[in-house]
Length: 144
Image (cartoon, rainbow, N blue to C red; front, side, top):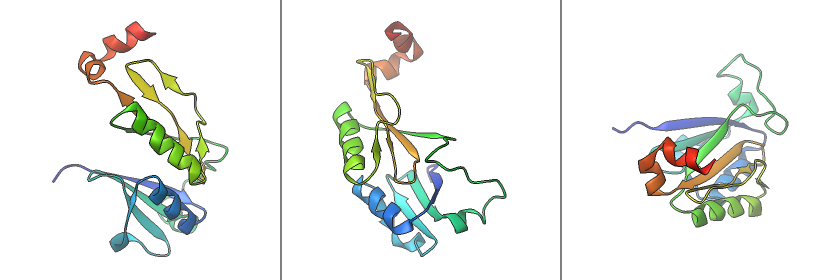
């Protein structure tokens, strides 16, 4: 079995959050969805668990940050092209998300944008050319 990642996000309105994530290409997995949580799948290895604030609080004693005013993580996901980066970002805007809360990045070999979901969680879709990936950090230092 390949390794997977499950990102747990606290949400104020579970139904609204489910609709948002479905609008940008995630699929709901009803086997792991109820009135407290919704399992949303982006790929075979990437899953997001949307948790009501109350349910989230059962997993940790730490204070939940308000993602509308504070950031703890930036969730970066790769896309197959710069056009696909734009497509998911624009879909997020149409679905009620905030477009480009972080600066756009266009270095030729790498392109990235960002969006925040209705709860303020920031996603950064990005694309990098196969050549830049093969060259590694050297390609990035030359672009700076």
